[in-house]
Every structure is written in C-alpha cells, then in structure tokens.
Length: 470
Image 1 (cartoon, rainbow, N blue to C red):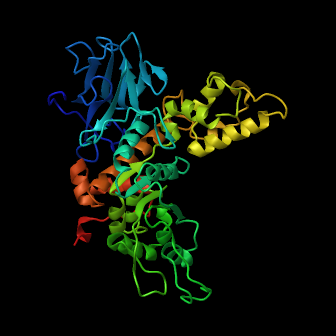
Image 2: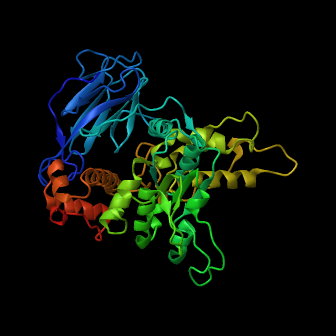
Image 3: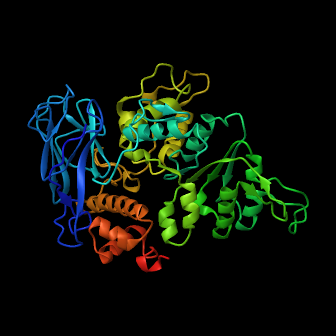
C-alpha cells in the first residue's frame, strides 16, 4: 500500500551544487521519492519533501510496521549537499551497506537498512517491476544484496522462456555466468550452449565465424564451415562483448534475428535456425548508439529484457558469501570467513570485480599452501590488494565507487559523476536519445542537457535531436 500523494520536493541534479542543488541553473529539478524495497511494508513509498521522518510513530511521513524500527528512527532531508540521512538515536541503528551511520549524504542508488526493512531514494518516474527474489542464488550466481536479488527475480521469470536477454555490466561482474545460468534453467538445457566472443574475432572473419561459409567462398575457404548460429541450433547462443561487433555486420545480425534464417558466406540458400539469444557487453549500448558505433534498430531488437549487473563495490554485503564459495575446499574445513581479512576484502573497491576477487584469493591460497601440511586458515591468508590510491576503494565503507584516499572535492566529483551518468543514461534511454523530449521531461534546457551528456560521455557524444527524426 502506497502513501497518499504529498508535496513533491525537487532536486536540481545538474545544478551548481549537484544533487540537492538550488536549481539556479538548468530549469526545473527532478522529483524524488523514498521507497521501501524490503521488509513488512515493501512497496510503500512517499514523496521526498524537504525533510521526512521514518519510524513506527503514526505521525511520521513514512510509517513502518516493522517491530525492529523505532518510533522515530531516521530522517531524510534534501539539502544543498544531497539527500542527508540522520539517525535519530534509534535502538537498532541505521545502516548503509554494513556500516552503522549517524549522519551521511546518501550515495546514488544506495540502500539503507532500518530494523528489518530496506529503503532507498529513487526518481519519481521509476517503477519497480518485480519484488526481489527471496533466494540468494540463481544458477552460478550468488548474492545476498538487494540489487542481486532483484536480478534473480527477473532471471527466474525469463529463463524458462525464449525471450532475448541483454546483459550489461563492467568487466568481471559475471555476465557470462548469467548467460550460462539462463541456459541451464531453460527448456534448452540439454541442447548446445555456444559462446561467440565478438571482440576476439578479426572483423574480416566475423561473418564467417558467426554464420558459417561455403567452400570456395573466399581465398582460404578450403572446406565448408559451420558458424556459431548453426552450432547453437536448438540451444542458446551467447554473444559476448556485443559492443565490439563490427558495424557493417550488425544489419546482417538483425536480419537473422528477425527472420530466424542464416545465410553462410558464399551460399544463396538460407537455413532456418532455432536459437535463443543472450547478449552481453561491458559498454552502455544506448551511449554507443548516440556515438554512432552501434545500430539503434539492433539494440532495440536485443534489449527485450535488459539487465545491468552491479559492480562488486556497490554490493559489499555479497563479498562474504562469494569468498566462502570461491575458497570451498581450499582452506581448513569449518574455517570461518571473518576477521580482519574479511574487513579488508569488504573495504576494497574491486576495479576488476568478482574476477579480481577470485584471482586475489587464488594467489593468497597458493602462497599459503605448504605441501604435506594442512590447508591454510582464512585468517592466515596474505591478501595483496594493491595500493588503495589506485583502486576505487571506499571511504569508511560508506561510499562505494569513491577512491580513497582523496580530498573532499575529489570524492564529491566522483559521486556526482556517477549520479549524472546514471541519470543521463536512464533519461536518454526512455526518450530514445531525443534531446528535446528528454530535456522537457527532466525540466532542463537542451543546452544544459548537452553539457551533462558531454560531461559523462566525452566530447564525441552524439545524440539524436528533434531535427533528426523522420
């Protein structure tokens, strides 16, 4: 049940002060809401006015029935520095990730824990499609965090179908694990699973590798070759690093997706294939479309269901379970995952994500293992995490994605950049890159929105304005 409509406080996300700015430049600011994303009152939301109080007291703006929540537990205030969270001396505390807080500026996309409930701040236009899964895994994927359980909820629904899935995320976040897990949970699990790495094949050979070729089709084609689509017939094809696919091959891929037919190089006879497609990329395809590096029609055909895997630094609560899984059978039986070593792992920024975590643990175990001796204890592992200044570590484990040590100004710039990039990408996604429509919806001038686009995408950013539309 949602709270009734209230006054809408707005925040100028692009103003001189960033989130919570005064809005002296750039037109109308953006409306926010506070949403309960887990707990007895899941789904309840309230507009974020200048200041709201959250607690069990009926006089609070957001009333929670969670018995672990104090009568007046915490306040959220829109201020010049952003959305400020202040614990009101609650009996069970307010937590950001695993850190108990008294007063912080809420990082973009962060989830607060109050009692047994989780709350977050979202733009007013955002609508949650599914509740998070109660499960802590899906196939080969693990995750205690709300972000991962929301992804599990989507995967549980789409895996049994034949719908096309596009997975975006930084390198090392587990995009191919998603593809393998989808295949394993589908009705095609007994059929072939084929991975085609779009970035590992020379551009001149990509068409042949993808669709196959006939003998004599080109110099060196001494025999017929079966391409990735034909090998995956009846099963699943994972197009890995899709953003690297050559531009001139993209319309051919689109035709295959639309018709369900492939035509090997040198052949005039098309061949029907039955393939479920899962694509992955570490690029943001909407941004690539605006830069002219990816076809918009192909992108829309692929993103029937789109998932974006969060980087490990944004889900520190998952580190303990991942470490336990990765060290299974490699350390002393029954050895607890905790202490100073776990604190180090949770506090590190993991620029290489889960892949870097796996390699770090493998190196530590290899160096700690003595032939003929019992397996090492977790506490005895020497974890070489590199210099903190070169990794996107956390400040007090409260601000994922902010390098440490840094000055206040540098930390603020990093948080603002992340916020602006997420907002601009989502805004342009909804309006298919049309700046005029996007600017009007966000209450910004087109000039101001162009400045934001250049800030987050670089000087080569190209966006479709209203004059470019048919």
